[in-house]
Image (cartoon, rainbow, N blue to C red; front, side, top):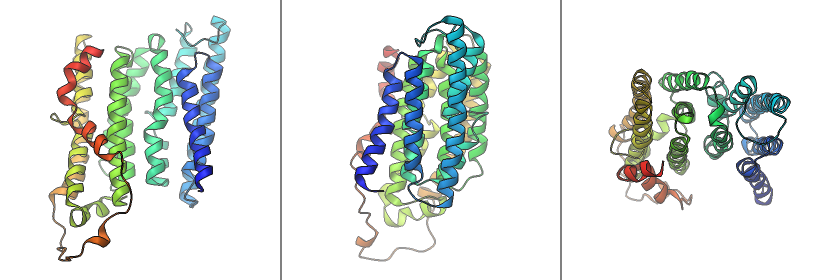
Length: 347
């Protein structure tokens, strides 16, 4: 794709999300979602392979269905309340429809089927945008309507998402699919806390985006798309293997790293609301995610490749790709845990 066209399309994607973030009118929010959806499709299809075309079609059909449900919810809300303003939705049917439409856009269970398929069919850079930037707009609307969302509906979806995000990733060798299932599980963690403490959801989203961005950037730097290609990394870039190890553990939510902070705070908030079984169950299902991250770390950093690299001249292994934002992103993705008390004050 030529740079001027890419700039125009990317600015449309960003402005679509910005319209959703800044709008207080339902129609304008819906228009923002549509702009964003139509502009992201050329980015998903930039490889021009049959798989990319199929992935883009699946994405378009799912998002169009979600937009239709969202508009239906908005119109029912308009009929009952007589206003377009985004505020408390008095009608339970309208609230349910809007919630379902937004969770469909996020790829939460039971509407998760498109996420692994679409992510696998597109390039790493497009996958990075899909699993980070595209989550911001639907979650911002859910944040605004959080007082009128049915907690039972959202918690049921969250539990299903965490379970599917854990079970689905166990059998995968494709890195993009693993990150897609990881995204489904993280969305579950965000949804479960949304009706109790929406600010915590924003904190979880921020940390999730930094971790996913760092992981995708490392994979793009190595041009790795499978576990097998990732296992060769130590031979070429030993430092990268240790960084991938730390990032995987952080994504799994292992204590000394950043990924543990949002899980810890969410479990604490749920127990404050007299829930014991739900956080216990979610903590156990988080172990499923940790297992497949551990497996990735094992193949990358903890096993030696059969052939030893005896070459003295390693210049041809060095990647020419620029990674400007990677160092600060990795620091944020791994070393934020000591700042947890400050984050809990911000709530």
